[in-house]
Image (cartoon, rainbow, N blue to C red):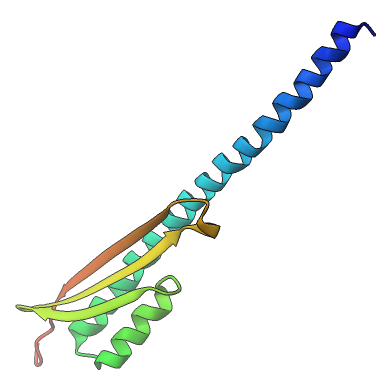
Length: 119
C-alpha cells in the first residue's frame, strides 16, 4: 500500500468520526419530534374524553382523573364551562431529553355542549 493510500484511509476515519455524532444528533431530533407528535395525540384524546365527561355532568374529580389517565405524564389539565359548553384543556411538555434536543409544549382543547337533564 502506498503512502498516499494510507493517508486517504486515515481521512476516511476522521470524516467518519465527525459524521457519526452528527447522524446520532439528527436521529435524536427526529425521535423527539415523533415523541412530541405522540404526546399531541394523547393530549387530544385526553381533552375529548374529559370534555365529554364534563358535559355529562360527572364530578370534577372524575373528569380530571379520566383526562389524566389519557394524557401524557406530567400534563396540566384545566376544566371550565363557557356558556353551554364544557371545555377541557390539556397541556404537556415534550422532547427536551437531557437538554440536548428542543422542548415543545403541546396543547389540546376539547369543547362539548353540556347535556341538559330530561332530554
